[in-house]
Image (cartoon, rainbow, N blue to C red; front, side, top):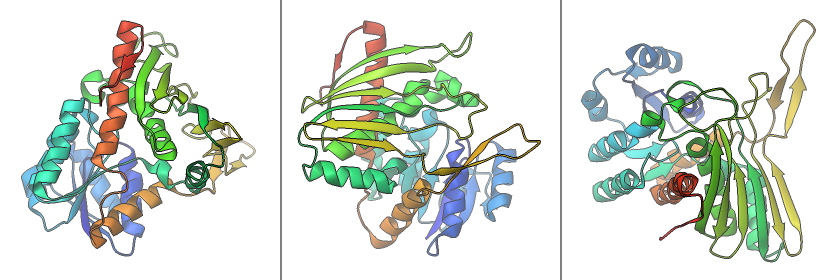
Length: 327
């Protein structure tokens, strides 16, 4: 499968490019980026062609495109890719508004191309085992879930609400919302959120908080999506879940499987992971799904459901009470 990457604005584009190069049935053929310097550097790094004109990029003989532009540009770019009849993998969050997300899903459906959303947590072996046990009823009824997706402050456009659509809540709530929906086979009924800017003096977006979700089944979920890790933390952050059922509890710490590296004379300690490479699973499903004509495991509708929760978080922050989801 010949693929292109549309923008390296999001840092995950580098992981996706590396995985495309490793897959025996894929080729990273081309790169487009509004930032020409960044685009040319990425293309040279991964052995791809840099194309400065977006229309020319979309006219290339490629089958699929990974969209890693700023979140506010996802709608424009995904719709353009769909109109060019290319399959799409879009970085999360799917968009900054649910209206944009719905338009993206509609465009891909009209053009007969697939839309996948980058939620790699589903490709963790531990998460898949947990889901199997929950779905088999081993925990009985799930009563509550306590979860965190805390990372370092990303800087750049992530902290510009015009480009990102929000701060830590927009950036991290979506991962855990998708994982919980998928594991429990349940949907969110209502949302309450407290969001603040606490880890620096000033900021245009929130960097910490908590979201409380009530699922349709009655399960209560808490999510900590904060950018609370210090710069000295040995990896970017964490992803943890404690799933409490009537008959037992499952605890997940997806980045626990690592070795600690440190050396004399070095000020830094580094964690070297030996767990699953979640991006490898994400790109493998993308490549092989397009190749075999399979529907997406993580579709545009999954991105829309998680974005509805993000929007409800911001509405709840302003209103000071739970926000009911209507869909």
